[in-house]
Image (cartoon, rainbow, N blue to C red):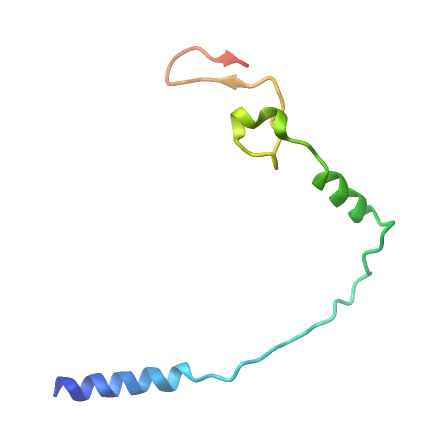
Length: 81
């Protein structure tokens, strides 16, 4: 009897899993991004930014930390780096 339930459940999942794939390609209706646009200049300046000066703090060159930094550990008085 348990075997019949297993077959029934497996058949149900098999029917639910068979779906038709759909591929939708939509063209944006907004303005195109050109070489002289402001968004291109902002993305270029972000990608060229060197954030390696503070890697000891954040361990990544993608971000930069503005110094000075105030560090407080537990109840000790804060230390400025």
